[in-house]
Structure formats: structure tokens, C-alpha cells
Length: 156
View 1: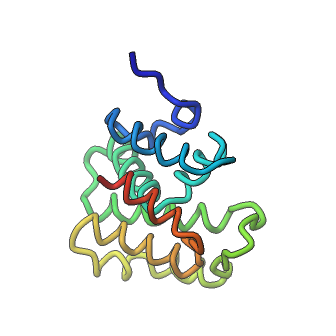
View 2: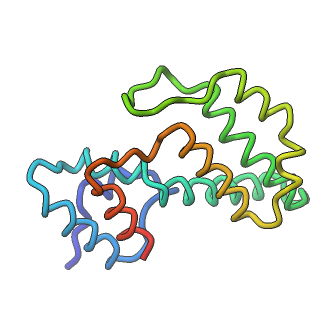
């Protein structure tokens, strides 16, 4: 019988890997590193590019369910606005390597959101833009390569 690891149980639904093989691969990865607790695995997953992508897709579907007649572009704008609002209202930085966008830069992007979204052809473009923002903030700093390895396991 398959038993879900603790790190999986505490993940929000928006980022839970779906298939058991992925969960097993991630748990094998976690066990390779002494001291890599379930809490650390939870955090590593939550800051992965894989999770950022999943959260944006989850947000899109949530907004779509509340605004079923909205156009795709309207939905994309709301997803991007939600991400920018999150950045704007985030608590003080706890990641010593991150360099958050200034309030002015975030407000400028909010002001120009229609122009930004007008360049997108697919929802993947929205997600890519959000990933690029996070990269600009150094959110995926990975000196050990472990985060990259984990992300690869999640992307399979």
C-alpha cells in the first residue's frame, strides 16, 4: 500500500504532484540527503519553477470558474495582476539571496498590465513572464544544484 510522505500531505492542492511515481521519485531524492526534512522538502517544492507554473494554472482555473464569460486575455490579465499583487503585499523578505522588485517597479507593471498582456499569445507566455520576474528577483538561486534536480523530477 502506498503511503504519502509528510511533505506531500502539507502541500496545498494547487501544487500537489498528481501521480504516485512522481511522489516516489521526490521521496527517493529527499532520502538521498541526510537532514533533508519533510519541512525542507515542502519549502523546496514551493519555491520551484514547477510550483510557480502550477500555481499560475491553478489561479487561471480559479478565476475562470468565477468569471466564466471572461475572455482569455482578461483571465491572463487577472492572473498576472494576482501575481503582482502578491509581490506588492508580501511580508518582509526572508530569502537572503532574493532581490525583490521595488514597489515602484511593481506598480509600474500594474499600471502597464494591459500593454504587457497584449504581447502574450498563449497562457504559457503569461507563465514565462512570471518566471522571468521571479528570475529577475533571484528567486531560483541554486548554488548546490539540488533545486534544479528536484525541479527536473517534478517536471517529468
